[in-house]
Image (cartoon, rainbow, N blue to C red; front, top):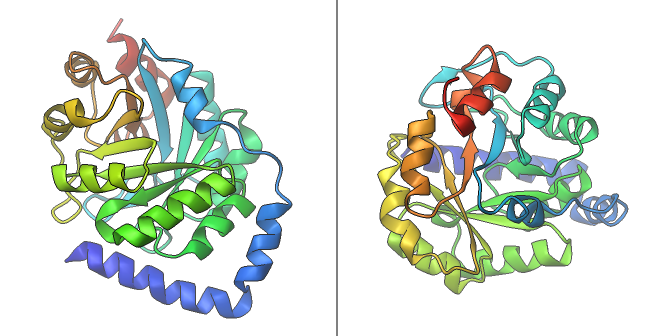
Length: 261
């Protein structure tokens, strides 16, 4: 399975990274970072209307190169100026062509919260994320045992970072809630096949408690998609490829939010 390949590669690279930059050093950086920007509050403040988390994503295993983005900070500024409530930065290097440098550049350029989107498999990455300026991190339920998922959510709380806990199935949703997730991302993309269908969110959204912030991720490419999800009470969306694959991402955000003028 391709997901296993990504996770195994991530674990190998972390082994090497820990040799040159031990966990205690990473923890020091995390402690000395500026205060976080409140990711959850930034999204909640917009409750009642559509909210977009706009993503920096150069490539994917299913599509290959999407956009050769040399200066992610410039795109992030366009996202912010066009109404995005937060920025997601994909930092996985081998398969998505991202980096922690991208995260750092974006955080320095914008005033809104920044999410690190990666394959988190070790607490090391949580402290690393905070040290590089992340205000939130993605935790993927399907690749984490319950004991680790619970622990990582708690570490995020101690670091004042938000944990966006991603699920794709009903079982994963129940596991994430039992582990203490306060922000749930329903991923419309099957991480085994990389196929997307917004029906995943439509089918699961009613099972997310009202006090848990719900985000629909992936496969959202039009204002019609957003309208369908709004009808089910979903107002917050993480959108990557539809923006990265567009020459005018600012206009695309407005089109997603308000429809074509």
